[in-house]
Length: 223
Ligand SMILES: O=C(O)c1ccccc1NCC(=O)[C@H](O)[C@H](O)COP(=O)(O)O
Image (cartoon, rainbow, N blue to C red; front, side):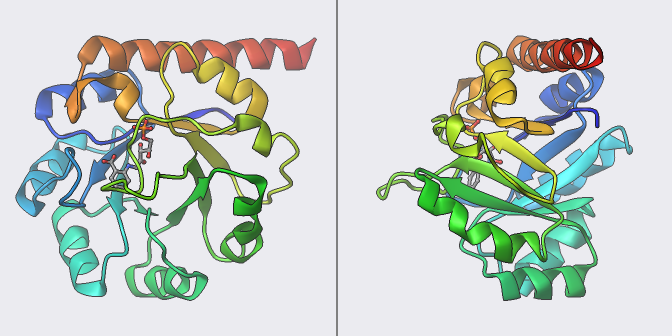
């Protein structure tokens, strides 16, 4: 399976275009007001139009209610709903039924105990995003630029495809993939010059590094 690269927290036409032209498979748009990457619905609509099916549009929400999700669906028409809050398995089921879109559930990881939620989510979600668990005083549950211990995923037995995120950047993404065996990577802070300010050269470097590690693992697998 080829590696999926998600560039998250895009908020300007210029950096969105850089990510698309560099070959991002997924582009993530944050709808969570405390985030420095938060988008208004109008901004989401404009950026969504720019994608023109060159990548999958991921709408990122945190414990959003149906009204908020309705508005996001209308504005962005996302290909995937990324649920990054405390959404229950039943809530995931409701959202899938109501909105008819694949759901990627973010699972915060700090210790192996955090993986106990996987069987429930794996029965409903379409993909899992492993992210570093946010500190208790954090203003948001993700996008914090901090990694978790990737070795916690070393012996993972998960039927669903999963992505690894949390503190990734061009210099560590190959190791994150080697250790976790993830089929996707996701980055936000690691391609920013300041919180919420995406850097074109960092975006391109991250995608190059992820693709290079994909090529290496494919070469090794055919030996
Ligand atoms: O990016 C945010 O600001 C954000 C806010 C609230 C919930 C989730 C958020 N981001 C989720 C993502 O998918 C990030 O790409 C992921 O947490 C990795 O972030 P980073 O460690 O900054 O690369």
